Length: 200
Ligand SMILES: Cc1cc2nc3c(=O)[nH]c(=O)nc-3n(C[C@H](O)[C@H](O)[C@H](O)COP(=O)(O)O)c2cc1C
Image 1 (cartoon, rainbow, N blue to C red):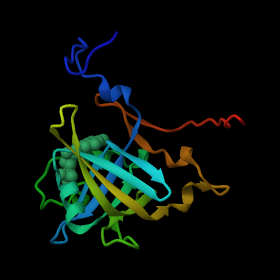
Image 2 (image 1 turned 90 degrees about the vertical axis):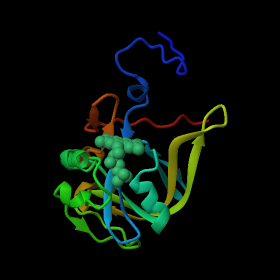
Image 3 (image 1 turned 180 degrees about the vertical axis):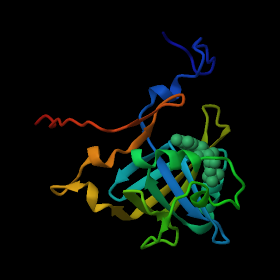
Image 4 (image 1 turned 60 degrees about the vertical axis):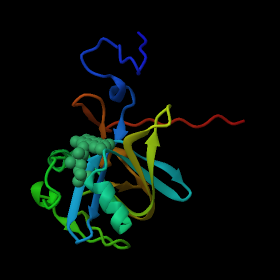
């Protein structure tokens, strides 16, 4: 089948776009507002875009609290969601008032970060401490502003739980990073394979 996104004429009960661009890692963004209140929310329009220097992005569909906080304070932590924390991650996505602390809501303990004031999820086996770089409000093909705000941050510090390091490498099968697929579907990485790049 083929369909044009403008016409959205796929004829399927649900839009397949997010199921096709999958899996997407889930950046679980913790931030602080101007008054020092903590905020935590998952973002699957999330990825790294550079490794020298390490830069990550998340995209806010509508200008949500996380984007506002990061712009105000210049910092965030990207706690990576993994299989063991799937329920807490889900609970923290509830649309609640900005005064509500999603750490408390989802029964998660905070741990201090080293280089930013924003706390991290204590149980997250990896977490990226980030400093804000810029926000890009996406435009569409007609040059009109969309409601997607892409927030970029440079990773300045990385936490890795020793339990997932085996022979000097992060063992992804122990880490079990969670990813978002389409619909209400998720996946966790439990199997890996290796390929070496061709020599030129
Ligand atoms: C797995 C998952 C992924 C999500 N990804 C996004 C995303 O990429 N962009 C977005 O705007 N909302 C996303 N959401 C919804 C937000 O987490 C939700 O709107 C949350 O309340 C936003 O919180 P905030 O206003 O404190 O930033 C996602 C929710 C879940 C459960």
